[in-house]
Length: 327
Image (cartoon, rainbow, N blue to C red):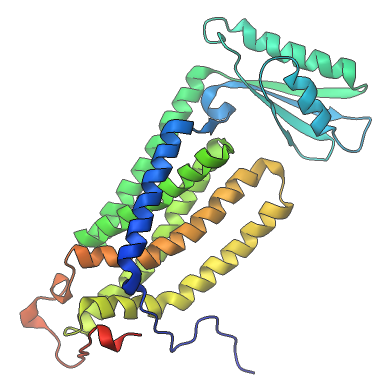
């Protein structure tokens, strides 16, 4: 039985033919994402802005009346709540941001929680309050600071690792691709106003790891070909390297997206933002590996001499190529 191959061995796509268009689009989208974040901001969750989370169970019904509950909590005047299932269908968590002035008067947060729980006990017979958790503004600021530094630290450490393993040009290329992926994700959350909490920070760190893994595989093949095909021009060599790793890239991305799609469709609401961020990150990360990580090496003047001095070139395995040989 012949095995199914999503990417045939003879695939020879001229990806770098569109490098200028791809980079231009990526720069515009990155700038657009940064503008969105600056103008619209992110819908920070309780983890980052402080607030109250009330966990409750509707013991008299099989399913929690989420829509009705959201409307009644909003009518109390403390803003729109974030209500999500928390375990069984009749268990929910109500997350509220701190009311105005809570930083100067801490009792306002407790008053808000008391009014919400009191309203539920009056409106829904048999409702059980399982817990009320508070996150102070000071703790939230610390969480945000640590989250930002974790992202920055991860990206810098990755750039240094690639710099040491390859050459500085590869570190710059990987860092630019990672910044592009993270910026796209931030722009997505600024556009959709999905809640941005610690789950999303975890998703961003995972995206960094995923994108890096894909980029390193391609960079490793580029390095091998640079040492092997000493007389080949850089653009066809990059196209060759990307095509040789394309099957692995497509298979990894597709299997990951299938799993994430299941989480998006059937997963609980509490991880919807995480699954959405990861799905976008996989798509954008795959794009940046193919259309950004490679072309950047052209502008940074990477060539065969980046790894093997010209006077030590191995002349046994030569391949001469120009743009006309690819495609």
